[in-house]
Image (tube, rainbow, N blue to C red):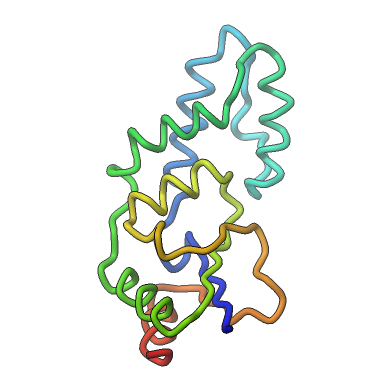
Length: 151
C-alpha cells in the first residue's frame, strides 16, 4: 500500500491565518485571567501548543476545546475548499493509497479544517511528521499531479 503524506497548509488550505486569529482572540478574551504574549510564542505550532498548555494552567481551561469552537465558527472566513485537491485525494483513495495529512497545527484545528475543506473522509491520519517512506505532497499542484498519476 502506498502512503501519501499531504501538507495540510501547503496542499489543502493554509490554517495559519485561522490559528493567528484564535491566538489574538484568546489573548484579548483571557487577558484578565492569564495574559498571553502572542508575539513570544514559537512559530512552530507543536512548540506553541506546549506553551499554551502551561498558559492555560493559569485558569484559562481547555484551550484546545476553545480552539475547536473558534475554528468551527471562523473556518469559512479563512479556508476555501479546492475541488481539484478534493478530487485528487479521492483518486488516491480509490487507487488504494493511505493518506496522512501532515501539519504542525494542533489536532482540533486540523480536524475542523479538514472537515470544512471537505476532505476529512479521505484522510486516514493526521500527523506532525510524514511517515517513513511516504510520498510527500507539498502543494496543491503536487497533489493534483500525484492524484492523476495514481489513477
